[in-house]
Length: 228
Image (cartoon, rainbow, N blue to C red; front, side, top):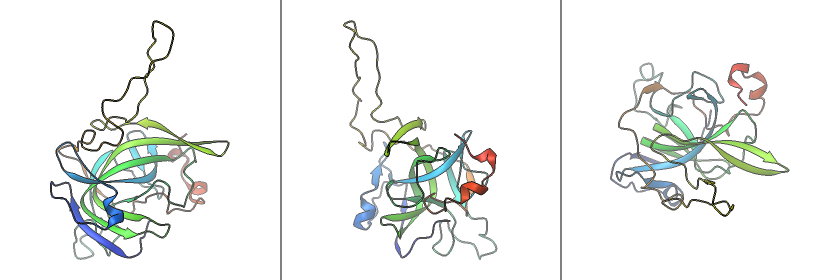
């Protein structure tokens, strides 16, 4: 599982109160259409139907969920996430941080909106490791590599989070291809984010951002989890 270094911030998102964060964390803040603050982050997972399975295995999680800790009773009870536990949803502040290659066909690169209680840790590869109480998957991409160049192909978009920069190709009378301009600029924030009012609650203590698991994990993963 992902383990960060020094804890640099402990704050609450999903409200209209803007948290005071370190500069690096501020870069990932955005708001929903209702003016609620969330953090956008990235992680790798395997997609199995409508669920996403961490590289560490397990039953997986839906596109939107709240986390509780499996060991909250035996360890004295604590809020999720907790600095002394691994509970919560894990994600990283950048899709370009070094670690496990994202070009493997079994992986999906997820863009997630984090809310509820959120912890920010220094990450060994630069950037930040986040652990959050609530996670909403807003974009799913399939990563492929062609002649050393990495391409991102959108696969799924969560309802309420419309795809950005989508290209449509209707036929024109003169035979030329037309590109329909998006209504709003890409990454415009408040226009495209809309958190669902409620979500299921899951025990999440073994989640992983994906960059933290060695490539050897793939050799031992159940065949049913490896999707192409």
